[in-house]
Length: 450
Image (cartoon, rainbow, N blue to C red; front, top):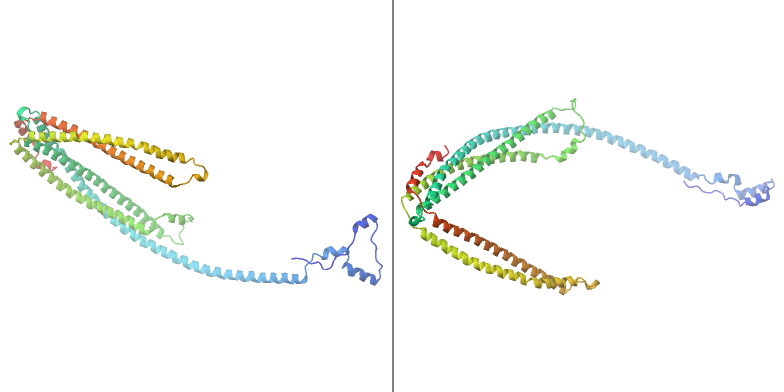
């Protein structure tokens, strides 16, 4: 609080008193002189410092009133907080009991859901186990059938090898050789098909095992979760083995929700069902593949046996066609070589304009201060460089394609030359040897994988 001066101080020169070494003059003790003196000095020099720092009565009353008002306000505030605390305690007690009851109910429902999903997982695990065993049996049949195709392949290859020793007038590409080649290609195709089917089977068995393992992991997790939820459901306020875990609620932000949990198991079951369906379809396909390949092999074997009784004069026509194709290839090679030269010259012709444009751009970068602006010549030069660069890129791409085509033509030229030489020098077969060898062709039962 601020203080006010009640009376003014009289003027008194202490330095003059100190120099004179005497006391100030004292007025006479009469009443008139006293009243005149006190009227000018308020209470004298001795009390002036004490009275000037004190509060006024108005300030004292204001301070007392403010303190009383503050005491009343604090008391009312404390009473309101006490009433609110009592109401909050009652509300939180009922809320805590309600939420704990709901939590126990939800744990019970969760146990039912977990048990239902766990039973469904057990059923699918058994189904996948049985399906995997059946698919494993089909895989063994595929392996036996694939091994059985080695005998027909060896027979056809030996027939072709023997016919390669033909010479003179017998140097012809006849129907027998074509049928033998068809048989070799058919056997290779069947082997490739059986290998591919075997790979698919092995892959499907692995997928079945992975799906089964996923279901087993999920079942194990649900079994453990069921035990934990059952233990949690038995907890109550009287349980002695409960503890405080302040960080447990924070970890809940990092886990999935119930929808994701159900979707995870549902997706696992759908995946297992898909794998089961795929496995069943694959077993049906394996059965059909084995049946079709056996029929195709036996049909081709009969066609080759019949072709061995006939001969066909087609070698000269085939050789003429190959030589004609080789000539066309040689002609195309010459034309492509000229095309490559023209493209190389076109690329070289673009180097000078590109250097001019880039040099112009380079030296224009030395323009001082505000002269270094994007004016029309600058834009034109930029467009020129971009256009020439694009043209060079297109020419180089075309040159690359032309060289690639020329390389392909060279390769096919060599292939044609080798094929002509092969057909010229490999035509002889011993009919009796080939026919005798073909009597060892496997039966339908062996080709079917039994």
